[in-house]
Image (cartoon, rainbow over all chains, first blue to last red; front, side, top):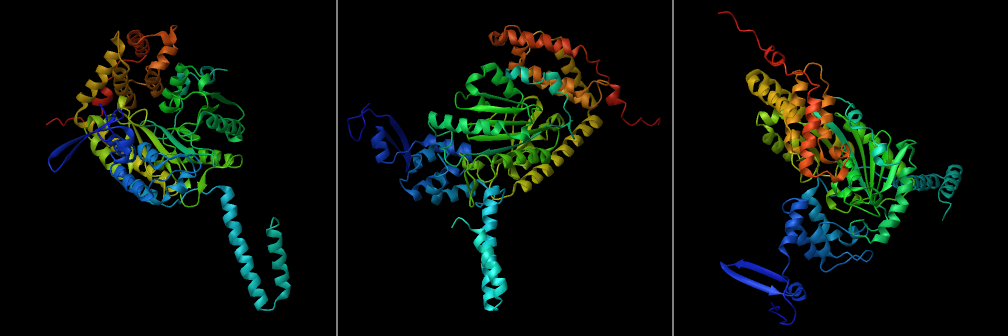
Length: 164
Length: 371
Protein backbone atom coordinates (compact mmCIF):
# COMPACT_ATOMS: atom_id res chain seq x y z
CA UNK A 1 0.00 0.00 0.00
CA UNK A 2 1.27 3.46 -0.94
CA UNK A 3 1.02 6.52 1.28
CA UNK A 4 -2.15 8.45 0.41
CA UNK A 5 -0.41 11.78 0.90
CA UNK A 6 2.92 11.63 -0.88
CA UNK A 7 1.93 8.61 -3.04
CA UNK A 8 5.59 7.62 -3.07
CA UNK A 9 6.55 5.75 0.03
CA UNK A 10 5.08 2.62 1.52
CA UNK A 11 2.32 3.33 4.02
CA UNK A 12 3.32 2.09 7.45
CA UNK A 13 0.88 4.05 9.62
CA UNK A 14 -2.75 2.98 9.44
CA UNK A 15 -5.24 4.94 11.48
CA UNK A 16 -8.98 4.43 11.71
CA UNK A 17 -10.70 7.45 13.14
CA UNK A 18 -14.32 7.75 14.13
CA UNK A 19 -15.44 11.37 14.09
CA UNK A 20 -19.06 12.54 13.89
CA UNK A 21 -20.12 8.93 13.42
CA UNK A 22 -18.09 8.68 10.25
CA UNK A 23 -15.25 6.27 9.83
CA UNK A 24 -12.16 7.75 8.28
CA UNK A 25 -9.21 5.62 7.30
CA UNK A 26 -5.74 6.96 6.84
CA UNK A 27 -2.80 5.10 5.34
CA UNK A 28 0.37 7.10 5.45
CA UNK A 29 4.13 6.70 5.40
CA UNK A 30 5.98 7.53 8.59
CA UNK A 31 7.09 10.97 7.40
CA UNK A 32 3.64 12.08 6.21
CA UNK A 33 1.98 10.69 9.33
CA UNK A 34 4.28 12.77 11.47
CA UNK A 35 3.65 15.83 9.34
CA UNK A 36 -0.14 15.41 9.40
CA UNK A 37 0.07 14.64 13.10
CA UNK A 38 -1.30 11.12 13.06
CA UNK A 39 0.16 9.88 16.26
CA UNK A 40 0.56 6.32 17.32
CA UNK A 41 -2.33 5.74 19.70
CA UNK A 42 -0.58 2.73 21.21
CA UNK A 43 2.12 5.01 22.53
CA UNK A 44 -0.42 6.80 24.71
CA UNK A 45 -1.78 3.56 25.99
CA UNK A 46 1.69 2.61 27.19
CA UNK A 47 2.07 5.93 28.99
CA UNK A 48 -1.33 5.43 30.62
CA UNK A 49 -0.30 1.96 31.65
CA UNK A 50 3.01 3.07 33.11
CA UNK A 51 2.11 6.34 34.71
CA UNK A 52 -1.53 5.96 35.60
CA UNK A 53 -4.70 6.94 33.85
CA UNK A 54 -4.80 10.46 32.55
CA UNK A 55 -1.03 10.68 32.37
CA UNK A 56 -0.99 10.17 28.61
CA UNK A 57 -3.32 13.06 28.05
CA UNK A 58 -1.27 15.27 30.33
CA UNK A 59 1.84 14.23 28.50
CA UNK A 60 0.27 15.10 25.22
CA UNK A 61 -0.60 18.53 26.54
CA UNK A 62 2.87 18.78 27.95
CA UNK A 63 4.48 17.96 24.66
CA UNK A 64 2.35 20.52 22.90
CA UNK A 65 3.54 23.06 25.43
CA UNK A 66 7.19 22.35 24.80
CA UNK A 67 6.81 22.07 21.04
CA UNK A 68 9.48 20.20 19.16
CA UNK A 69 12.12 20.39 21.85
CA UNK A 70 14.99 18.00 22.12
CA UNK A 71 17.67 17.63 24.74
CA UNK A 72 20.98 19.24 23.78
CA UNK A 73 22.87 16.75 25.88
CA UNK A 74 21.43 13.36 25.03
CA UNK A 75 19.30 14.10 21.97
CA UNK A 76 16.10 12.91 23.61
CA UNK A 77 13.00 14.35 21.97
CA UNK A 78 9.56 15.02 23.33
CA UNK A 79 8.30 12.22 21.10
CA UNK A 80 10.66 9.83 22.88
CA UNK A 81 9.29 11.02 26.19
CA UNK A 82 5.72 10.58 25.03
CA UNK A 83 6.42 7.10 23.78
CA UNK A 84 8.42 5.70 26.66
CA UNK A 85 7.25 7.82 29.55
CA UNK A 86 10.89 8.16 30.49
CA UNK A 87 13.55 10.83 30.18
CA UNK A 88 17.00 10.47 28.69
CA UNK A 89 19.35 12.22 31.09
CA UNK A 90 19.55 14.68 33.99
CA UNK A 91 19.57 17.61 31.55
CA UNK A 92 16.20 16.49 30.11
CA UNK A 93 14.58 17.61 33.36
CA UNK A 94 15.64 21.20 32.55
CA UNK A 95 14.74 20.99 28.89
CA UNK A 96 11.29 19.47 29.34
CA UNK A 97 10.48 21.10 32.68
CA UNK A 98 7.71 23.31 31.26
CA UNK A 99 5.42 20.45 30.41
CA UNK A 100 6.70 18.16 33.10
CA UNK A 101 5.05 19.72 36.12
CA UNK A 102 1.54 18.93 34.90
CA UNK A 103 2.60 15.31 34.38
CA UNK A 104 4.19 15.16 37.82
CA UNK A 105 1.03 16.54 39.40
CA UNK A 106 -0.92 13.51 38.23
CA UNK A 107 1.47 11.05 39.81
CA UNK A 108 2.94 12.62 42.93
CA UNK A 109 1.93 14.23 46.17
CA UNK A 110 3.60 17.49 45.20
CA UNK A 111 5.95 18.71 42.50
CA UNK A 112 8.65 19.85 44.90
CA UNK A 113 11.23 17.57 46.46
CA UNK A 114 11.01 17.44 50.25
CA UNK A 115 13.21 14.46 50.93
CA UNK A 116 16.86 13.77 51.41
CA UNK A 117 19.37 16.42 50.35
CA UNK A 118 22.85 15.25 49.33
CA UNK A 119 25.51 16.10 51.90
CA UNK A 120 27.38 18.28 49.40
CA UNK A 121 24.27 20.32 48.67
CA UNK A 122 23.47 20.58 52.35
CA UNK A 123 26.78 22.20 53.17
CA UNK A 124 26.49 24.39 50.09
CA UNK A 125 23.05 25.54 51.20
CA UNK A 126 24.20 25.94 54.78
CA UNK A 127 27.29 27.77 53.54
CA UNK A 128 25.24 30.30 51.62
CA UNK A 129 23.12 30.90 54.70
CA UNK A 130 26.15 31.32 56.93
CA UNK A 131 27.73 33.80 54.53
CA UNK A 132 24.49 35.80 54.42
CA UNK A 133 24.41 35.88 58.21
CA UNK A 134 28.04 37.00 58.45
CA UNK A 135 27.45 39.78 55.92
CA UNK A 136 24.37 40.92 57.82
CA UNK A 137 26.30 40.95 61.09
CA UNK A 138 29.09 42.87 59.42
CA UNK A 139 26.68 45.59 58.23
CA UNK A 140 25.20 45.86 61.72
CA UNK A 141 28.64 46.09 63.29
CA UNK A 142 29.66 48.86 60.89
CA UNK A 143 26.42 50.73 61.50
CA UNK A 144 27.02 50.49 65.24
CA UNK A 145 30.64 51.55 64.72
CA UNK A 146 31.72 48.34 66.46
CA UNK A 147 34.89 48.13 64.39
CA UNK A 148 36.49 45.42 66.49
CA UNK A 149 33.63 43.01 65.65
CA UNK A 150 33.56 44.28 62.08
CA UNK A 151 37.22 43.41 61.59
CA UNK A 152 36.66 39.93 63.02
CA UNK A 153 33.62 39.37 60.78
CA UNK A 154 35.53 40.61 57.74
CA UNK A 155 38.29 38.08 58.44
CA UNK A 156 35.70 35.33 58.96
CA UNK A 157 34.07 36.13 55.63
CA UNK A 158 37.46 36.18 53.95
CA UNK A 159 38.34 32.80 55.42
CA UNK A 160 35.00 31.40 54.35
CA UNK A 161 35.54 31.89 50.63
CA UNK A 162 39.20 31.34 49.95
CA UNK A 163 38.54 30.26 46.39
CA UNK A 164 37.25 33.62 45.27
CA UNK B 1 33.26 -17.67 43.13
CA UNK B 2 29.88 -18.23 41.53
CA UNK B 3 26.77 -16.55 42.94
CA UNK B 4 25.38 -19.99 43.70
CA UNK B 5 28.30 -20.67 46.04
CA UNK B 6 27.94 -17.24 47.59
CA UNK B 7 24.23 -17.50 48.40
CA UNK B 8 23.28 -19.45 51.50
CA UNK B 9 21.21 -22.58 50.77
CA UNK B 10 17.41 -22.19 50.59
CA UNK B 11 17.01 -23.98 53.95
CA UNK B 12 19.22 -21.42 55.65
CA UNK B 13 17.72 -18.44 53.82
CA UNK B 14 14.30 -19.44 55.14
CA UNK B 15 15.50 -19.47 58.76
CA UNK B 16 15.60 -15.68 58.83
CA UNK B 17 12.91 -14.27 61.03
CA UNK B 18 11.57 -10.88 62.05
CA UNK B 19 8.62 -9.15 63.68
CA UNK B 20 5.15 -10.11 62.37
CA UNK B 21 6.67 -12.70 60.05
CA UNK B 22 3.58 -14.88 60.20
CA UNK B 23 2.09 -12.37 57.81
CA UNK B 24 4.89 -10.11 56.60
CA UNK B 25 7.39 -12.25 54.72
CA UNK B 26 9.86 -9.44 54.08
CA UNK B 27 10.39 -5.68 54.05
CA UNK B 28 12.30 -3.82 51.40
CA UNK B 29 13.39 -0.26 50.68
CA UNK B 30 14.92 0.60 47.35
CA UNK B 31 16.47 3.83 46.14
CA UNK B 32 16.95 4.89 42.52
CA UNK B 33 19.96 7.06 41.74
CA UNK B 34 21.70 8.30 38.60
CA UNK B 35 25.06 9.80 37.81
CA UNK B 36 24.92 13.49 37.07
CA UNK B 37 27.01 13.44 33.94
CA UNK B 38 25.93 10.29 32.15
CA UNK B 39 22.66 9.68 30.26
CA UNK B 40 20.24 7.28 31.99
CA UNK B 41 20.95 3.62 31.12
CA UNK B 42 17.60 3.18 29.38
CA UNK B 43 18.65 5.78 26.82
CA UNK B 44 22.45 5.56 26.76
CA UNK B 45 24.75 3.92 24.25
CA UNK B 46 26.65 0.82 25.18
CA UNK B 47 29.95 2.69 25.63
CA UNK B 48 28.30 5.20 27.98
CA UNK B 49 26.69 2.40 29.94
CA UNK B 50 30.01 0.62 30.30
CA UNK B 51 31.68 3.83 31.46
CA UNK B 52 28.99 4.31 34.12
CA UNK B 53 29.36 0.65 35.08
CA UNK B 54 33.12 1.06 35.49
CA UNK B 55 32.64 4.13 37.69
CA UNK B 56 29.95 2.62 39.85
CA UNK B 57 30.99 -1.00 40.42
CA UNK B 58 34.25 -0.21 42.30
CA UNK B 59 32.57 2.67 44.19
CA UNK B 60 29.79 0.40 45.43
CA UNK B 61 32.11 -2.51 46.20
CA UNK B 62 34.37 -0.33 48.34
CA UNK B 63 31.55 0.75 50.67
CA UNK B 64 32.25 -0.35 54.23
CA UNK B 65 28.47 -0.43 54.79
CA UNK B 66 28.37 -3.61 52.71
CA UNK B 67 30.91 -5.36 54.91
CA UNK B 68 34.22 -6.83 53.86
CA UNK B 69 32.83 -9.67 51.81
CA UNK B 70 30.68 -8.91 48.80
CA UNK B 71 29.72 -10.66 45.61
CA UNK B 72 29.90 -8.53 42.50
CA UNK B 73 29.55 -9.53 38.90
CA UNK B 74 28.73 -8.21 35.48
CA UNK B 75 25.37 -9.47 34.27
CA UNK B 76 26.84 -10.99 31.09
CA UNK B 77 29.03 -13.24 33.24
CA UNK B 78 26.06 -14.71 35.07
CA UNK B 79 24.41 -17.79 33.55
CA UNK B 80 20.65 -17.49 32.95
CA UNK B 81 19.91 -19.99 35.71
CA UNK B 82 21.92 -18.03 38.28
CA UNK B 83 20.07 -14.85 37.36
CA UNK B 84 16.75 -16.60 37.76
CA UNK B 85 17.78 -17.83 41.21
CA UNK B 86 18.50 -14.20 42.16
CA UNK B 87 15.03 -13.22 40.93
CA UNK B 88 13.42 -16.01 42.95
CA UNK B 89 15.30 -14.80 46.03
CA UNK B 90 13.95 -11.31 45.31
CA UNK B 91 17.45 -9.89 45.10
CA UNK B 92 17.17 -8.54 41.55
CA UNK B 93 14.23 -7.56 39.35
CA UNK B 94 13.11 -9.61 36.37
CA UNK B 95 14.09 -6.65 34.21
CA UNK B 96 17.61 -6.71 35.59
CA UNK B 97 17.91 -10.44 34.98
CA UNK B 98 17.47 -9.69 31.27
CA UNK B 99 20.47 -7.32 31.24
CA UNK B 100 23.91 -8.21 29.95
CA UNK B 101 27.23 -6.41 29.46
CA UNK B 102 27.26 -2.97 31.07
CA UNK B 103 25.00 -3.99 33.92
CA UNK B 104 25.98 -5.57 37.19
CA UNK B 105 25.10 -6.57 40.71
CA UNK B 106 26.76 -6.14 44.09
CA UNK B 107 25.46 -8.20 46.99
CA UNK B 108 26.63 -8.26 50.60
CA UNK B 109 27.36 -11.37 52.68
CA UNK B 110 24.17 -11.05 54.74
CA UNK B 111 22.18 -10.89 51.48
CA UNK B 112 20.29 -7.92 52.86
CA UNK B 113 21.78 -5.20 50.69
CA UNK B 114 21.78 -5.64 46.94
CA UNK B 115 22.75 -3.03 44.39
CA UNK B 116 21.75 -3.28 40.74
CA UNK B 117 23.97 -1.25 38.44
CA UNK B 118 22.44 0.00 35.19
CA UNK B 119 18.95 -1.32 35.54
CA UNK B 120 16.50 1.36 34.42
CA UNK B 121 18.54 3.82 36.48
CA UNK B 122 22.29 3.80 37.05
CA UNK B 123 21.70 2.53 40.56
CA UNK B 124 18.89 0.62 42.13
CA UNK B 125 20.01 -0.06 45.69
CA UNK B 126 17.88 -2.06 48.03
CA UNK B 127 17.92 -3.20 51.62
CA UNK B 128 15.88 -6.24 52.64
CA UNK B 129 14.80 -7.41 56.07
CA UNK B 130 12.72 -10.40 57.18
CA UNK B 131 9.31 -9.58 58.68
CA UNK B 132 8.07 -6.05 59.19
CA UNK B 133 11.21 -3.91 59.45
CA UNK B 134 10.70 -1.04 57.07
CA UNK B 135 12.46 1.52 59.26
CA UNK B 136 15.51 -0.70 59.64
CA UNK B 137 15.61 -1.29 55.89
CA UNK B 138 15.33 2.43 55.21
CA UNK B 139 18.12 3.27 57.65
CA UNK B 140 20.38 0.64 56.12
CA UNK B 141 19.94 1.83 52.54
CA UNK B 142 20.05 5.49 53.59
CA UNK B 143 23.51 4.84 55.06
CA UNK B 144 24.67 3.13 51.86
CA UNK B 145 23.36 6.05 49.80
CA UNK B 146 25.02 8.67 52.01
CA UNK B 147 28.36 6.87 51.87
CA UNK B 148 28.13 6.54 48.11
CA UNK B 149 27.49 10.25 47.69
CA UNK B 150 31.02 10.86 48.91
CA UNK B 151 32.38 8.84 46.00
CA UNK B 152 30.15 9.75 43.07
CA UNK B 153 28.00 12.72 42.14
CA UNK B 154 24.32 11.97 41.67
CA UNK B 155 21.90 13.77 39.40
CA UNK B 156 20.03 16.03 41.79
CA UNK B 157 18.24 19.34 41.64
CA UNK B 158 16.81 21.33 44.51
CA UNK B 159 13.43 21.42 42.81
CA UNK B 160 12.99 17.80 41.71
CA UNK B 161 15.35 16.02 44.09
CA UNK B 162 17.10 12.92 42.74
CA UNK B 163 16.52 12.58 39.02
CA UNK B 164 15.39 9.25 37.61
CA UNK B 165 14.78 7.84 34.15
CA UNK B 166 11.07 7.47 34.87
CA UNK B 167 9.35 10.49 36.43
CA UNK B 168 7.33 8.12 38.63
CA UNK B 169 10.47 7.60 40.74
CA UNK B 170 11.51 11.23 40.86
CA UNK B 171 12.47 13.06 44.06
CA UNK B 172 13.32 10.57 46.74
CA UNK B 173 13.69 7.67 44.30
CA UNK B 174 12.30 5.54 47.10
CA UNK B 175 10.19 2.42 46.81
CA UNK B 176 9.12 1.05 50.16
CA UNK B 177 7.50 -2.36 49.96
CA UNK B 178 6.54 -5.39 51.96
CA UNK B 179 5.59 -8.90 50.92
CA UNK B 180 2.50 -10.14 52.68
CA UNK B 181 0.99 -13.60 53.04
CA UNK B 182 -2.79 -13.06 53.22
CA UNK B 183 -4.62 -16.40 52.94
CA UNK B 184 -7.15 -15.35 55.60
CA UNK B 185 -8.31 -12.31 53.66
CA UNK B 186 -8.44 -14.35 50.45
CA UNK B 187 -10.57 -17.07 52.07
CA UNK B 188 -12.85 -14.50 53.69
CA UNK B 189 -13.17 -12.84 50.27
CA UNK B 190 -12.14 -9.52 51.76
CA UNK B 191 -8.95 -9.19 49.80
CA UNK B 192 -10.42 -7.05 47.02
CA UNK B 193 -11.83 -4.60 49.54
CA UNK B 194 -8.44 -4.34 51.17
CA UNK B 195 -6.69 -3.84 47.83
CA UNK B 196 -9.12 -1.08 46.88
CA UNK B 197 -8.70 0.67 50.23
CA UNK B 198 -4.92 0.45 49.99
CA UNK B 199 -5.01 1.79 46.42
CA UNK B 200 -7.03 4.77 47.60
CA UNK B 201 -4.19 5.63 49.96
CA UNK B 202 -1.88 5.94 46.98
CA UNK B 203 -0.24 2.57 47.51
CA UNK B 204 0.08 -0.20 44.95
CA UNK B 205 -0.72 -3.87 45.53
CA UNK B 206 1.09 -6.30 43.29
CA UNK B 207 1.90 -9.96 42.93
CA UNK B 208 4.86 -12.02 44.05
CA UNK B 209 7.45 -10.60 41.65
CA UNK B 210 6.28 -7.00 41.52
CA UNK B 211 4.78 -5.08 38.65
CA UNK B 212 2.45 -7.05 36.43
CA UNK B 213 2.76 -10.35 38.25
CA UNK B 214 0.14 -12.65 39.67
CA UNK B 215 -0.53 -13.02 43.37
CA UNK B 216 0.63 -16.62 43.56
CA UNK B 217 0.30 -18.42 46.85
CA UNK B 218 -1.75 -15.59 48.39
CA UNK B 219 1.38 -13.44 48.48
CA UNK B 220 0.89 -9.73 47.83
CA UNK B 221 3.33 -6.85 47.61
CA UNK B 222 2.32 -3.45 48.95
CA UNK B 223 4.39 -0.42 47.98
CA UNK B 224 4.28 3.36 47.66
CA UNK B 225 3.69 4.96 44.28
CA UNK B 226 4.43 8.59 45.03
CA UNK B 227 8.05 9.54 45.49
CA UNK B 228 8.03 13.32 45.10
CA UNK B 229 6.81 15.98 47.52
CA UNK B 230 7.18 13.99 50.72
CA UNK B 231 10.18 13.13 52.91
CA UNK B 232 11.33 9.50 52.96
CA UNK B 233 10.44 9.09 56.63
CA UNK B 234 6.83 10.09 56.04
CA UNK B 235 6.51 7.53 53.27
CA UNK B 236 8.04 4.79 55.42
CA UNK B 237 5.81 5.63 58.38
CA UNK B 238 2.66 5.79 56.29
CA UNK B 239 3.24 2.36 54.76
CA UNK B 240 4.18 0.99 58.16
CA UNK B 241 0.84 2.18 59.51
CA UNK B 242 -1.08 0.70 56.60
CA UNK B 243 0.76 -2.61 56.98
CA UNK B 244 -0.07 -2.82 60.68
CA UNK B 245 -3.70 -2.40 59.74
CA UNK B 246 -3.54 -5.07 57.06
CA UNK B 247 -1.89 -7.40 59.58
CA UNK B 248 -4.75 -6.77 61.98
CA UNK B 249 -7.33 -7.48 59.27
CA UNK B 250 -5.55 -10.68 58.27
CA UNK B 251 -5.39 -11.84 61.90
CA UNK B 252 -9.07 -11.07 62.35
CA UNK B 253 -9.96 -12.87 59.14
CA UNK B 254 -8.07 -15.96 60.32
CA UNK B 255 -9.73 -15.86 63.74
CA UNK B 256 -13.21 -15.44 62.36
CA UNK B 257 -12.65 -18.29 59.88
CA UNK B 258 -11.48 -20.47 62.75
CA UNK B 259 -14.51 -19.61 64.77
CA UNK B 260 -17.19 -19.66 62.10
CA UNK B 261 -15.90 -22.07 59.50
CA UNK B 262 -13.22 -24.30 61.03
CA UNK B 263 -14.21 -27.12 58.69
CA UNK B 264 -13.57 -24.96 55.61
CA UNK B 265 -10.19 -24.01 56.96
CA UNK B 266 -9.32 -27.61 57.85
CA UNK B 267 -10.51 -28.72 54.44
CA UNK B 268 -8.13 -26.33 52.67
CA UNK B 269 -5.20 -27.18 54.92
CA UNK B 270 -5.87 -30.91 54.90
CA UNK B 271 -6.26 -31.09 51.12
CA UNK B 272 -3.10 -29.06 50.63
CA UNK B 273 -1.27 -31.53 52.87
CA UNK B 274 -2.79 -34.45 51.00
CA UNK B 275 -1.98 -33.22 47.50
CA UNK B 276 1.52 -32.02 48.32
CA UNK B 277 2.27 -35.33 50.01
CA UNK B 278 0.86 -37.52 47.27
CA UNK B 279 1.09 -35.86 43.87
CA UNK B 280 3.42 -37.14 41.17
CA UNK B 281 3.33 -34.10 38.94
CA UNK B 282 2.58 -30.57 40.02
CA UNK B 283 2.97 -27.11 38.46
CA UNK B 284 4.67 -24.33 40.38
CA UNK B 285 1.44 -22.36 40.45
CA UNK B 286 -0.56 -25.17 42.03
CA UNK B 287 2.28 -25.98 44.41
CA UNK B 288 2.58 -22.39 45.61
CA UNK B 289 -1.13 -22.04 46.21
CA UNK B 290 -1.14 -25.27 48.24
CA UNK B 291 2.01 -24.41 50.19
CA UNK B 292 0.25 -21.19 51.16
CA UNK B 293 -2.38 -23.25 53.01
CA UNK B 294 0.31 -25.44 54.53
CA UNK B 295 1.94 -22.29 55.88
CA UNK B 296 -1.40 -21.14 57.23
CA UNK B 297 -1.73 -24.52 58.95
CA UNK B 298 1.71 -24.08 60.52
CA UNK B 299 0.72 -20.58 61.70
CA UNK B 300 -2.41 -22.03 63.31
CA UNK B 301 -0.43 -24.84 64.97
CA UNK B 302 -2.29 -27.54 63.02
CA UNK B 303 1.03 -29.26 62.27
CA UNK B 304 2.39 -29.42 65.81
CA UNK B 305 5.85 -27.93 66.15
CA UNK B 306 6.59 -27.71 62.41
CA UNK B 307 8.50 -24.43 61.89
CA UNK B 308 7.32 -21.99 59.23
CA UNK B 309 10.82 -22.06 57.77
CA UNK B 310 9.96 -25.50 56.38
CA UNK B 311 6.98 -24.27 54.36
CA UNK B 312 8.94 -21.20 53.27
CA UNK B 313 11.66 -23.50 52.03
CA UNK B 314 9.11 -25.56 50.07
CA UNK B 315 7.83 -22.32 48.55
CA UNK B 316 11.30 -21.28 47.43
CA UNK B 317 12.39 -24.72 46.27
CA UNK B 318 9.24 -25.17 44.19
CA UNK B 319 10.19 -22.32 41.91
CA UNK B 320 11.67 -23.23 38.55
CA UNK B 321 15.28 -22.11 38.94
CA UNK B 322 15.68 -23.48 42.45
CA UNK B 323 14.23 -26.75 41.24
CA UNK B 324 16.57 -26.93 38.26
CA UNK B 325 19.47 -26.17 40.54
CA UNK B 326 18.70 -29.23 42.65
CA UNK B 327 18.51 -31.52 39.61
CA UNK B 328 21.55 -32.99 37.83
CA UNK B 329 20.19 -31.89 34.44
CA UNK B 330 20.11 -28.26 35.58
CA UNK B 331 18.77 -25.94 32.87
CA UNK B 332 18.15 -28.88 30.58
CA UNK B 333 15.33 -29.97 32.86
CA UNK B 334 12.18 -29.41 30.82
CA UNK B 335 8.93 -28.16 32.21
CA UNK B 336 7.22 -31.59 32.28
CA UNK B 337 10.14 -33.20 34.07
CA UNK B 338 10.22 -30.21 36.36
CA UNK B 339 6.64 -30.89 37.43
CA UNK B 340 7.59 -34.52 38.18
CA UNK B 341 10.70 -33.49 40.08
CA UNK B 342 8.81 -30.80 41.99
CA UNK B 343 6.21 -33.35 43.07
CA UNK B 344 8.96 -35.72 44.22
CA UNK B 345 10.67 -33.02 46.27
CA UNK B 346 7.36 -31.95 47.80
CA UNK B 347 6.36 -35.57 48.63
CA UNK B 348 9.65 -36.19 50.39
CA UNK B 349 9.51 -33.01 52.42
CA UNK B 350 5.82 -33.14 53.24
CA UNK B 351 6.37 -36.60 54.70
CA UNK B 352 8.44 -34.90 57.43
CA UNK B 353 5.40 -32.89 58.52
CA UNK B 354 3.00 -34.62 60.95
CA UNK B 355 -0.61 -35.12 59.86
CA UNK B 356 -2.85 -32.12 60.48
CA UNK B 357 -4.40 -32.19 63.94
CA UNK B 358 -8.00 -30.95 63.75
CA UNK B 359 -8.09 -30.41 67.53
CA UNK B 360 -5.76 -27.44 67.10
CA UNK B 361 -8.62 -25.67 65.39
CA UNK B 362 -11.67 -27.37 66.80
CA UNK B 363 -10.32 -27.54 70.34
CA UNK B 364 -10.36 -23.80 70.56
CA UNK B 365 -14.11 -23.63 70.23
CA UNK B 366 -16.14 -22.87 73.30
CA UNK B 367 -17.47 -26.12 74.79
CA UNK B 368 -21.20 -26.36 74.18
CA UNK B 369 -23.32 -25.95 77.27
CA UNK B 370 -25.03 -29.19 78.42
CA UNK B 371 -28.55 -27.82 78.07
